[in-house]
Length: 444
Image (cartoon, rainbow, N blue to C red; front, top):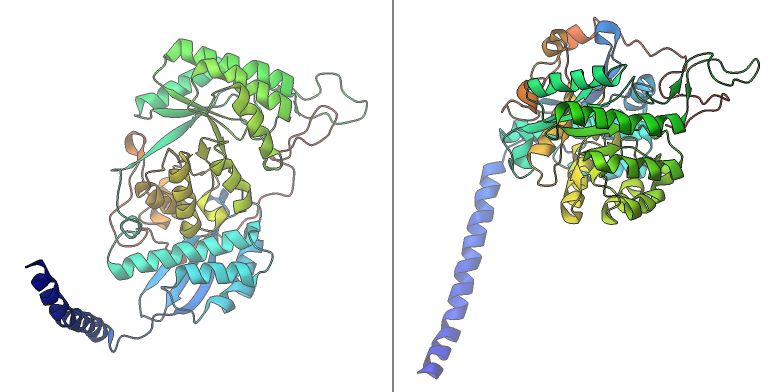
């Protein structure tokens, strides 16, 4: 009986194979029928929209027009310090390279742009490429009739938890402002005292100055690492253990004192300490890991995968702090998120007051679809921005909500944007050129 069944199976095999082949042909034919006659969807035009609404932003929004009438996408290429450079790169160098390419081939276009530029992953190229990339995902979602997060695998959470920014001149003022965020529904709050470097600044003209030398506010790291742990202790005493505290060092510390600062912050149960080291000194995170369990976040100014891959794969950090429009857009961000999922690190995509709502929306789409998500930096804009960019996400109760429209769910009113010509930031030194008491620059 077993032999007979085996022989019958052999006899039936050709028929089964033929049936399978017939089914495959039918499927292929159905797809061919479905797509026959549809025009090839290509990039018809790419251009930057530059704008400074309210005179306080320097935004570059990329618009991609397709060969299908009425179908377009937008993306963020904003860079507060190099807006005109990014816009020129898009208009003069990259747009001609992109026009005519198939809209659906996002990864291929992404890598072709990097390789064609030869020296890849620089800041300006990444910004420009991010704008294109987000716009292509926006188009893909619109054509599919789905939000971008659905194309990335669908929601794994209902909304995006965000952290707030509390500042103040004194510990009491900081604690009071942290409390205001808690009352609004935020569970995570970043606490700074007097801005970045605050708590470690020597007032203008004070201290042992060089005669005829630098007289402005000066950063002193010993003063800083003494003041900030006391600030966190004050907040804990006043508000208790519920608030998930964050603090941004902004890379101001030397390596040895960065290790010591991380150790001193451990008793206060930090959610994370951000950017305790500059990118050039990432290997020192290994020393921090040896002495403390204080969670570390890093990556705000990373542009190259060779900077963040070791941090994640060696588990030197706990949160990846990239800005989506700085690393190459949604295509790059989802790969970072997958890497984080694999190695037990979480994402905490960066925003900042200079950032635009298109980047924020793109980050939220990745957040919604990633199990490697940790937290999202909040950003809020005045009513004018919600009018200029319909669909700008809102943050009631400490959560970011995006609308369910296809694509990124956000648009820009070009005519309105043109009413606010781009105003570059002043050429003077700013918060990224902090100096020590001897006049030397402190590395951000």
